[in-house]
Image (cartoon, rainbow, N blue to C red; front, side, top):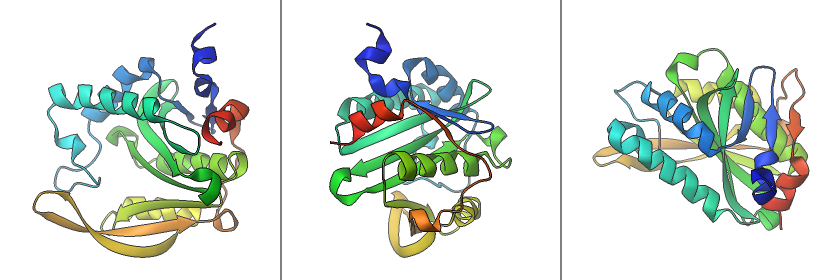
Length: 214
């Protein structure tokens, strides 16, 4: 046996014209840590639900590793978070996640992502989210995909609009003490999905379905 026999979900690969998305492996951790430490967003505003990027390097790096391991260990059919390493030319440049609770009944997924700053502005954020949606709708049978973004985050809202998301309400949240933001809730269904002009390559779809769907 090898690692792919022990954890068959590692066989999953999503391939776009410029990117590979695969469930995070331990070998990806150093590159992802470097990508995060290189900077993910401007320092004046926090775009995430929790201020993880503000931690000092000596805390951020082990915290990332613990979080990635914890989500892998907690994965169960119909109740899971899959964290994908996003690789460009084999180099980790960010993370795209896919989450579901009671997936067999609800057929609903949600997602979030981050991308190292040096690779922002080239359409890669749109490409990696499009890959995730195509996989969720076409290979897992998802009927709804949800996301959330603070109302000032024009770049992330632009990605969502390009792909066909629609607003589905707003709520007030506190990403860190003393800060209140308005989060826009977004929703997309297969019929609304503005598909890219390329076809997603998928390896390991059968192993993914066996791991994620009861």
